[in-house]
Length: 327
Image 1: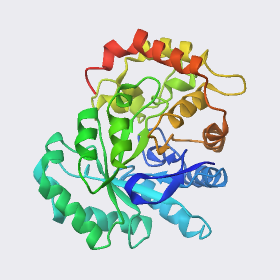
Image 2: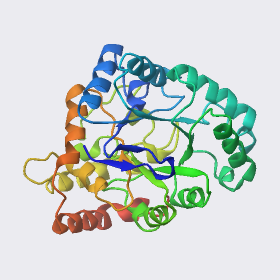
Image 3: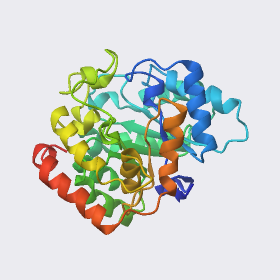
């Protein structure tokens, strides 16, 4: 597994990490034993970056990771968590007192004195222009509550605002073959500033796996059932904000671009890995097989120029007009 420096953290992390939202909630039930098996399979496949958040299952995801790593003292895993969604989304709630309280809870859940990285969890746009917010984050670092801080963003404009902040170590943003807008300004700006890029929603909530049809039924507690139009949180987090029918048609075309020996999902991950400026991509996995297959994408040969051009043509032809103006 290739490792890259994660921006201003100075730490190396695997180019394929593991997103662990699904171990907490909103993707249907994942049993504890299955969650530990996924974490173990990812680790054994060379994954050294686990991404989580304090609201994934109200802390369940963090707790599972903490318990897993307590029993794997041989593991050198970088854990990136998030905070900010435990309160009403107003600028004034992003305060030092709340940061300390949320930080204390995450450190207890993970069983550590100092977090590797804490990311603001898609905060309100007003947060990015607040010097007080970033001063408070600097205080968390000074108090050794976290080694570094970052921001998970919804829009490219928010990403650029975060990159301009000198203390921001990395930016987490939706990036996949159905969401190309970050390639235009965000990734070049991050490279110039030395800020890491963590690519999330890399498979467009599974669309890019090519496994879904119009008849696919998702569990009632799966966000792909209840958030298709942004009913619960930002629409971009579900199917990358694409209409499900549009996404299904595009996914069929994308599946045809997969090289011999690679699945469509692995092709999507390989595409992300080779975008200049990307530090790591964090697909989720609900099974051992998915965790291993995702990690294996890192060892695939680079996609050809013809395939890269075909991805661009697919995006421009089917998707760009629907979502480009939003994010």
